[in-house]
Image (cartoon, rainbow, N blue to C red):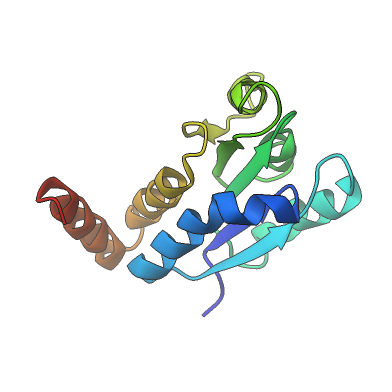
Length: 152
């Protein structure tokens, strides 16, 4: 099955912070792909990735980055797909700079933004978005939240 979710991170050092995203997507049975792409170090690759995402069958993109954190916004500017930004803890500002860079998008280029380090919530939000189209996935999200409410 073609991946439904694209997980993109700005550098290999972000993999540890983003592992909760892939873990929860796996738990929910959602297919995904992972890529390391930097909006600053390889903008041409980011452009190719974003422009081809819909054609490859992706339905949601999750982008995690720290510091200047332009990755989610750069992708959102190039695709009609929903983009979820995960600001990562980094640098002297401990992720506040990443949060502001991710959430403060201009009108017309939205990025859904989770909390600093909110990799798990990004996966859950992606699942909720996909649940609008896939009823079996919506059921899994409901079960997941019921388990949370019961302390499981």
